[in-house]
Image 1 (cartoon, rainbow, N blue to C red):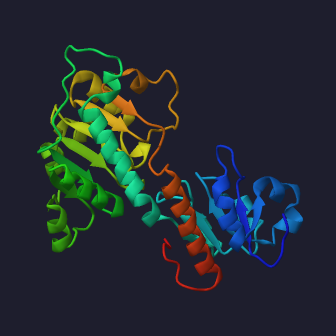
Image 2: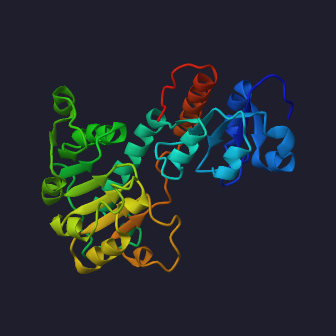
Image 3: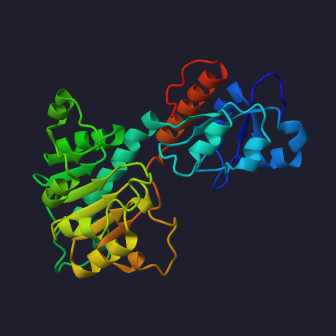
Length: 317
């Protein structure tokens, strides 16, 4: 890879499980001199001063104090998604490094994933793959009540989709949406999460993982839900108490669960959740479409260039 005058961008690798996608390389090379972690570690003394930005793809490379100390010209870290729970934000900030995520690129595809899980669980599509005529009745989606916990950009797009399915929409959020935004999707605000849990047929969890939201949905919350209700988690695995969820599913406290996230990811092959018929688990598919992943990289490029040029960063944390 030739250096030129382009700013150095550190990435984990190109291709592979934790590498940036090959289809994104041309876009990145247009603006940056790409440096993989392998190249950096093999020639740390030469490469350390070249790196001005890091692009995290699926949480890699791992950001720690040692790496930050070795990059004197690092100005910004761009994340390929919304959640930043894999980063020590205070540590990064202590080095004067700015941080950005990609909330706009991921909202539609993640909302699609949430609705897909809702529909698949409601109509028992996974169970139905093992053909059986007997006792395979699902539940109706039209006219049902969905409770959205976290009404940011993703949550709001779920509400738009739920409206198209003629669902009743409740939501709980730290701050209430504007009246016109509520009216546009027909959403009703629940100031208390308990009120939402008691009314919803489908509870959709769409919050960031923070110390405040860790195990936000636990035994008490599940016991507030209807026994016919379904829990859908597209946020982070640790937002739901998985041990409490296993018990709730086994004892009929709730009807079913559909999870795009777990802790850890992937689950151990002998984990109880993988053995229950009333659970659907997908491997964190949230944003995984060709268009969405490319848009994520486009958003990252925009954020990095803004930071390097001293301009306001569109998605700065």
